Image 1 (tube, rainbow, N blue to C red):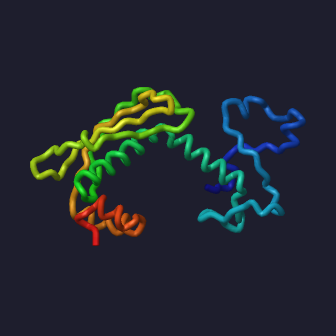
Image 2 (spheres, rainbow, N blue to C red; image 1 turned 180 degrees about the horizontal axis):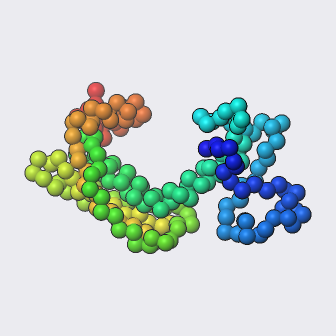
Image 3 (tube, helix red, strand yellow; image 1 turned 45 degrees about the horizontal axis):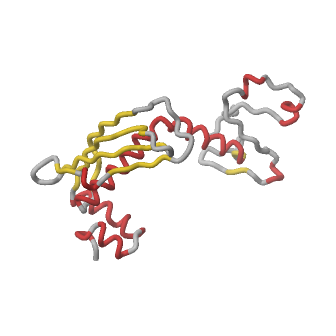
Length: 189
């Protein structure tokens, strides 16, 4: 998060108002407006803080967050659909597990959803892949707010008590007991 040189271009409000900033510097960019005045106490220590760079300003922190979101945006469909697949598989198998084979189709790879997206999947579409019912194929989709189909996925979920042993304590601690019992009856109690 911090380096000896500023990570992001910085301009002062005075430079901007006086016309001293090249418009190309801001064209098609995200601009974070903030202050670097220490008296405002909008600064944070980070794991990279040092005597030479003791803090990160709030606007720099916001710039790092925005940078990460922009960088990770292309991965969003895969991450969201993988999460949906995990829950579909876990709730049908009633066990923890992991996803292992992912077939993702980006129907509109260049499209950026301008509003909320909805991830969908149906329990009826979760089918066993093997006779032991260890592997389950799930199908899911990602829709834009207007219903436009953005991506689809077919993901195989591997259920197993060995995974449940590690995962159930986490879910049990964060879920109402009656709901947890309905979700994972083999691990309630």
